[in-house]
Image (cartoon, rainbow, N blue to C red; front, top):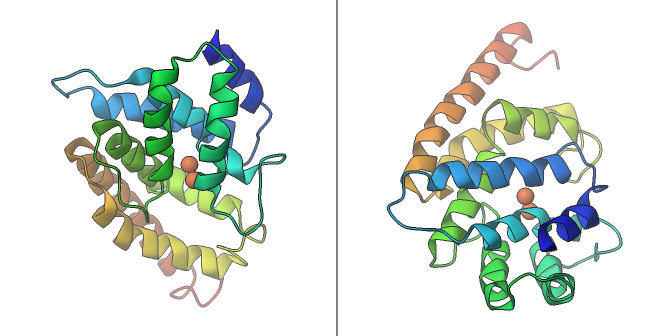
Amino acid sequence: MWKNKILDLVKDFKHPAWGFSHFSRIYELSLELAKTLQFEINKDALFAAAYLHDIGAFNPYRQKDKDHSDVAIENCNEILGSTDFPSEKIPLVKDIIKSHMFYAKPKDNIESKIFHDADTLDFMGSIGIARILSIVGKEDWTPDLQSAIKLIERFSKELPQSIVTENAKEIGKIRKKEMEQFLKNLANQTKQYDLI
Ligand SMILES: [Fe+2]
Ligand SMILES: [Fe+2]
């Protein structure tokens, strides 16, 4: 069954910020965001996209100088085509993956919008803070703790603006407050970040 084959392919992709647990989280969150919609969404496409969208960050898929979204898209036909995944849904999987990042404009279908928002929300709130702090010194985004704190501050201000669906906007408001509270406490405990 195609779901097991995909899970098997990515089960060892472990990373504190992006990897198997992130894939599972945003699949669940996508379904939650879709709950109040009046129409059916394509859950198969969302599942495939959730577990494949960041494979471009892992070997053997990783390609230097190429956006990880494009790398994942390039591998969709081969990966999904070798399973019993319904082939007519592959273009939608590619659409969802193409625009999943907060800096991308979501494609004009509800699955892409929901998924883009779920991936963006995972950079917010307590989970967003945990993920950003987990990559300090390991990724270009966060060479040191100071830069990670600046990134948390920037994300708290900018990410709500890139959320497009109504349910996600509500969750975004809560997660923004969590980040603001964290930053406020941290500033109080570190002489306004001086002692970090
Ligand atoms: Fe990504
Ligand atoms: Fe992601």
